[in-house]
Amino acid sequence: MIGAAVAILRKDLRLELRTKESVPAMSLFTVTCFVLFHFGLDRDSLDGELAAGVLWVTLLLAAVIGVTRLFAAEREQGGIDGLLLAPVDRTALFLAKGTALFVFLLALELVALPSFGLLLLGPDLRDALPELLLVLLLADLGLAAVGALTAALAAEARARELIVPLLLLPLLVPLLIAASQASEPLLRVSPSTEDLGRWLGLLALYDVVFLLLSIAVFDYLLED
Amino acid sequence: MYAKGLKSLSIASVVAVAAALALVFFYAPLDADQGFVQKIFYVHVPMAIVALCGFVAGGLMAIKHLRSGDRTWDMRSYVAIHLSIILGVGVLATGAIWAKASWGHWWVWDEPVLVSFLVVFLLYCVYYPLRFSIDDPERQARYSSVFAIAAGAFVPLNFAAVRMAESFTHPRVLSQTGGDLPGQMRLTFLACLLAMALLFVTLWKLELTSKNASMQLKRLRAKLLAEADARAAA
Image (cartoon, rainbow over the protein chains, first blue to last red):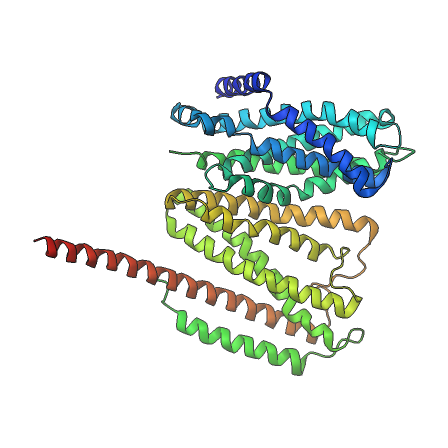
C-alpha cells in the first residue's frame, strides 16, 4: 500500500513540477489577497489578532484552490479510471493525495509567509518563527486530511467547484480557531507564547480525528 | 413498513406538545430576570438539542448504510438530516429573537452554543447541493453517507473548539441548558424536550412513509405502463 501511495504521490509531484498549475496559482492568490486586505482594511501594517486573522483566512482560501484542483488532472485526462481499475487500496490514494496537498501547502507557505512579513506584518516575522512554523505544520496536516476528503467527496458532484468551498470552509472552522488563536500572541509586537500548548493540542486533536475518519470512509468514495 | 405505529405516535406527540405548551404557559414560573420572554427558552433549547441529536443520528444511520449496503438506511439518514436542518432554521430564528429581547442584539458572538450551531448549520446546508448533484442513485447514497458521517463527527469537535475560543474572553458563570434550573422550570423543560423529540420521530416516520409510498407508486406505474406497451405491441 505504501508503495502504491508513493508512486501516486511521485506522479502528482512530477505533474505539478512540469505543469506548475496549483502552487503558483495559490501563491499568486495569497499575495493578491494581502494587497486586497491592505486596501480593504486601509492599514499599512498589522499585528496581533488582525494579523493572525488575515494570514489564516488567506491561507484557507488559497487551500480551497489547491483542493479544487486536487483531482483535476485525473478527471480532465481520464486518468481516474486507470487509478480506480488498479488493484490498489483506496487508502493509498487518500494518503498520496493528502501528502501531495500537504507538500503544496508547504510550498505555498514558503511564498506566503515571507510576503506577509514583507507586505503587511508590523512586528518582525523572525521573532517567533519556530513557534509559528509549528502551528503551520500542524494546521497543514489537518488541512491536507480534510482537503483530500472534501476533494474526493465533491469529485462526483456536478457543481464541484461550488461544493468544494462550501463544504471545506465550515469544516475548517475549528482549525481556523485553533490556528489563529495560537498565532495571535506570536504576531504581537512583543511576541509571547501564552496558551500555545492548548491550541496546538486542539490542532493535533483535529488532525487525528480527521485523519482517522478520512482513512475509515475513503474506501467508500471513488468506487466502481 | 413505516406506517406501522404512526397513528399512535402522532396522537402521542400531539398530546405531548399540547401538554408541554400548557406547562410552559400555566405551570412554569415567570423568570425573575427576563420575564415572559424567557419562555422562548422552552422552544429554542429543546429544538437545538433535538436537531443536534438528529444530525448525529443521521451519521449513525449512514454508518449502518455503508456497513450493510442497504439503501433504506441512507433514506433514513437523509430524512433525519433534512428534518434537523428545518429545525435548525427554527433554532437560529428563535435564538435571534431571544438574543434581541434579552441582550438587545439580533446576533451575539459570545454565546458559544449559538455560534457553533450556526457553523454546523452552514455545513449541513451543503448536504442538499452535494446529494442532488450526484445522479447515480447508488453513488448518491454512498457519498451522502460519507458526508453524514464526517459532518456527524465534526459536530462535537466544533462545539469543543468554539467553546474553547469563547471561554478565554467570557468565563461562563451559569449554564443555560438545564443543569441549575429550579424544579418547576426543569420539569417544564424536560416535558418540552420530550415533546420535541416525539414530534421529530413522528415527522421522520411520516416523511419516510410518504417517500416509501411514492416510490412504490412509481414502481407500480412503470410496471403498468410496461404491461400496457406489451399488450399494445401484441
